[in-house]
Length: 268
Image (cartoon, rainbow, N blue to C red; front, side):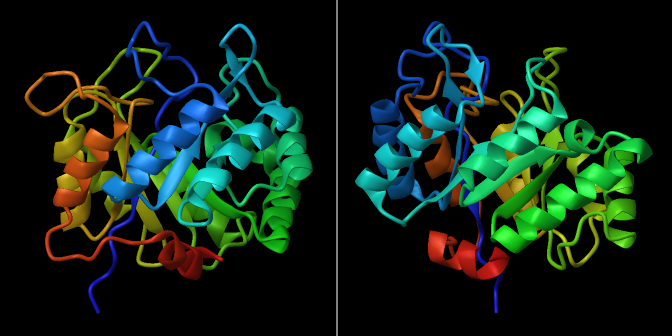
């Protein structure tokens, strides 16, 4: 059977504001509106960030619950809701892990470089990753380089990451250094994943759709949205997140689009 193509949408991120794009979704109601539109466009997973009163990045459990409830009220279980653990320079590893354990979300993304940056962090990371598996939290591991991909493979081999069928996110480009991604950088990262690891790509900047098309050809998946990119391939600004999801869905070739139910069957 042809592997379904998962389209994820990351509609807001930790840093962009409405000064960057007028319809960047921030409030629970705006995130619910966005969820409806990206679901209709073909997304199966929505990657959610929440903000504090000053519109800064937040890992507040109550704010996550408000956002999740608003999305669920609007789309039910037709989207997997994935929350972020991103530190954004504000949170320690212990705070990131404690938030997830209190919230118990359906799905979470976490950066290996933040939660398990070195050998000294491995015991605590192992305990947390095992808790995620036992609690049934769908986990996606974020990787930014070939070196991190190699470390990820090592963590799998020694059981620090207990997933038999892990899910990774391969990031092309960087926000901090304002470096756009290049689709040609995907192949070596994807090659490092191995047959057992499902992966999706996200790409900073205008090359996003090129990276999506390459991911589909390599039997991977894709994450698009305003967190990483607000531009269409022609350089014009996308009207909304759904516009980027629709373009990503068209890159799937002969692969069927994955639904939320399909994603849950794959990873839970």
